[in-house]
Amino acid sequence: AEYLEHIRNLGQADIPYTTYAHMANSVWSTPPEQTRGGSRARAFDLARIEEASGGGFKGSGLTHGREYSEEELWDNFASFIAEVVPVAEEAGVRIGIHPDDPPGVKLGGVPRPIFSSFDGYQRAMDIADSPNVGLCLCIGCWLEGGEAMGKGVVETIHHFGGQGKIFKVHYRNVDRPLPHFVETFVDDGYFDMYEAMKALEEVGYNGTLIPDHIPQMGDDDRLGTAYTLAYMRALQQRAANEVHG
Image (cartoon, rainbow, N blue to C red):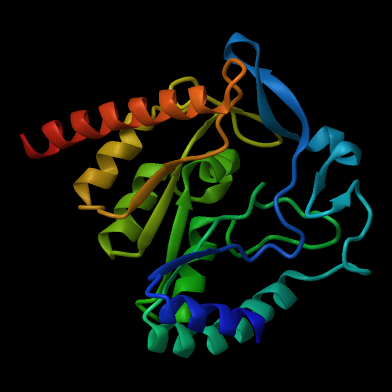
């Protein structure tokens, strides 16, 4: 009921978009590690699960009192989105669903079967069956999952972006996929971020594109933000020139 009221309020305020994450116990991380130049960065290491925390929870204990099945998570989403869709459509609000972070890892007894793979997203979009429900594509989360996501970043952009289902993009990189990753600067991960920018240009993406989880640069958070935005803008200009001539 609170979420439906939130959607109605957004519509009344002429705010046309919101990001939603279907994670019962939030984003989890293990203690920060270092990336290029000794910069402090977010990390997740499955071997250090006892040190992991997220959403006020910590360690390997149950976060919601018992173990949950994947079927229960799917039933929960189907029930939830059936109530949300008519309200979102009436309010004129689009909802971009963020990937699980980390994806595919059962945490606190709660599995993450839906927004941890290409097939899961496709099934969820089919269940929602609404122009107002799409993706907040976090490239970093997709890279965290690696091959377990089913399809790579570029193919995912072409598929969902070609349908106009990508509403927002979180633009970040990681050093390697699970079970242990460290977030990196956009130009220093295992994926060439230009390939994502080019794919977005090829599908005509015109939504929001933001930096995300930037490693600490120097003693001022604005340094990393400025560096990342400038790098993104350069990639965007290169992609536009290559795709459109």
